[in-house]
Length: 580
Image (tube, rainbow, N blue to C red):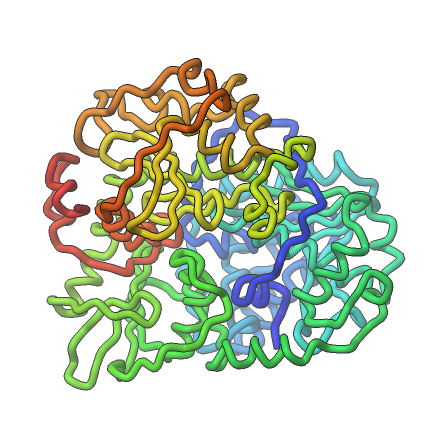
């Protein structure tokens, strides 16, 4: 049914919890790279293929998919001519032609109908320099960590009825690596799931002997000059059995996960029922700017891929009925996306999953203003979401102390495994710690509020955030306090240096004075926590409105439209009215 990438992105997989993700820094160069790109998918493909070339692959092999795509559109001779300039010098002509060749990939990977003339691919000097730097960084990293490198590894005899194909980027004498030319803030867990599934597939495949000798599996991020890895000694047979079940759909246990081909039929049926539409190869990255007609199945494929995660919906998802949608228009401009439903009377509505919000203007208005609108939202709220995701990452990195776990309330042990850690999911202005405990980051003054909620009208807000951690997550308090003291969580203790702008304004309004570190941690646990019971729902209304805008930050996706944002010249009290 799926490739590894499709399954991880569209269905999802439970992660085992006994391993640790470690960080390895590159031997850094002094070159500063921004993270924008004229065409990210070409950017990544060209980097990957040129790395293979540098390691000894001949051009025909490195750009094999590109040549197959060129053949599908009758331009094999043209592609072969471009290939003549591909060499390890990585000069400008080589990189330009590499990008042009990669533009043929879509004609093989997806459909010849999506192919766009490669003559229109003319990367700027800036992009050429970026690709050259990223190739050199990746090659240097691999050479420093291995004796030999092989690439494009698949897993014959390792697959199941659920997963039919997959390939990782590089395998060395000691490690499996996947290259990520991205700065996606939301995808790290998904990528970890991907490499864990590759590892299990490899151990089940006819090449299992190569994988049995690996010491680590990991992700290479050359933009950030960092790699994340898991030591294979920390991946137990219990972990592998869980991955074989949740990722391959197999009836697997600790003893048989390498050999069994027996499927969990209930899981297969649940996925088939949930995915009540036909997956397509729709990929916005493979479209140039413009307005396009797409199918409902195209939209559902995309929505399960990314937008579901923004909305916090279960990945097992039934397609909406779309009773009032006659066709769907896909708008793309400067990497910003918008999906518009058109009903039988021609009424336009912006889509957010199966929900429609009526629009007042014609298609051309939205196409003309889509990038202006999105950039305005990012200008107003980008620093705010930057802060939330930094807080989220810090919370997810807090380690449990098992010695303190005996103090955890019984309902906590039932509700959540200790080793799962704190959730850190960001939605709107709220960061989840678990199902009932959350942080609210006030978008008007930058203050951080921890609370326990039984429902939206019944929550207890803690006077000091450490008290929430101590009383609700005692197993995590020791490491939380330690990180506060050594300054590893500055966004939670010193907003004036992080959340608040230089003129002491935070979006709008004056920032509140943040309690000192000493006041935050003193006397925690010596008496009952100081909490205030709150039943108002205004906090949630603000958060829901920010969540509707958050997909612009997370995925460049517009799911709501308010003309008033186009009229704002600078952050002021008008924003308060728009969010409240």
